[in-house]
Length: 306
Image (cartoon, rainbow, N blue to C red; front, side):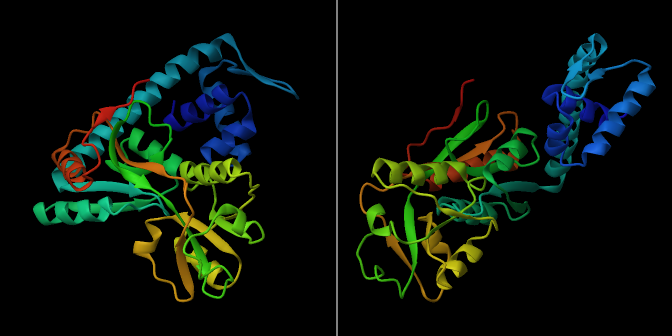
């Protein structure tokens, strides 16, 4: 019995749908059906009842679902332990961050940590928010920067500050000379944002602020998870972009201005998440540095209750 067979079976058993299981596993649906069938042949028992309209577990399938989850969880723990041992030996710190919201505390913390621990290799990864959370849970990342709210139950959370919103606008836009922009002033301007999957907390904060101001908003979601791409679209006249305030410090694009939103402007909390069992020297040291550079944010670290 291979782990791949178990992984495919558990996905189908939890989804009770082959197509959804394939999407979750990011493989073709026929591959899922084939692997589950091989597992049934190997065990000599039917695990799933399949009809034209539904999939359900047989009694044997219900037993294997319980045991299969245990095996997969143990395999994940074993993999994480090996990776932790390797990274501890190699002196490696794996940090993930969002493509759009990168608070000033992160580069400051990285710079101080690199200076204090020159023998530690720092590996940076950029992912959408939910993927960052999942990688921290699976201990494929030592820590990651995300915006709240996010599904961080059970993880260690270190506050880094708040992320506001700016309007990225072409210098030729009629409103480019305004000291601040209100939602109503942008009613007739096409609005661009990164896809919601990139940073759901930031996206939802903006949409909620617009709704509370009595203005309907249907931003065009730019699929490319790249701030450079978004700002070039603004420069090309595609519209105004709503971006995290930290963008202004990181990007200078000819022909593009960053203007504040008129008060009240939405914000979302930015935090550094890590696994509570991730206690390596490099990870602990980086968290300590991150807390110190994020002041005057309240120096608090907690594990979110279930």
